[in-house]
Amino acid sequence: MAVDKQCETRIWGERVQSWQCHKRAIIERDGKWYCKIHDPEYVKQKNMKKQTRWAKEAAKQSAIWALKQARNNATEGLTLEELKQVTPNLIRKALGGI
Image (cartoon, rainbow, N blue to C red; front, side, top):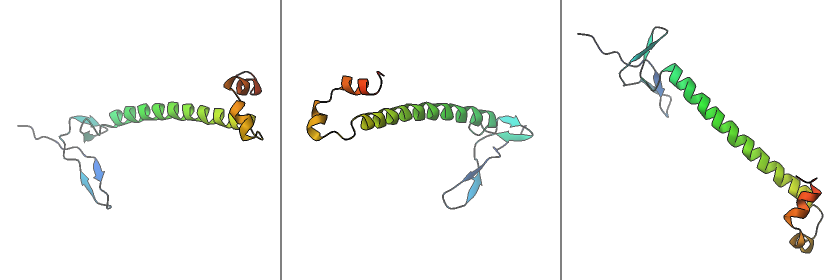
């Protein structure tokens, strides 16, 4: 009868303590056994997906900030009454037609 192996990953708690993962190991990589969650290949793919998603979100946020900064630069020095009359088309025109 084969003995079930245990995942070799160490899990770190909040207070510097660690313990071995309690899940049954099903994947062997470089002589070490891992559960599906701690499989290095799975972790690598998961991290790549996260990085891709974060990069997209960061690019989107940077574009929003750039547009807000451009809007602020285009309306700098205007009084409150002048700002009330500014339309989005005038701002676009001031920004060079973007």
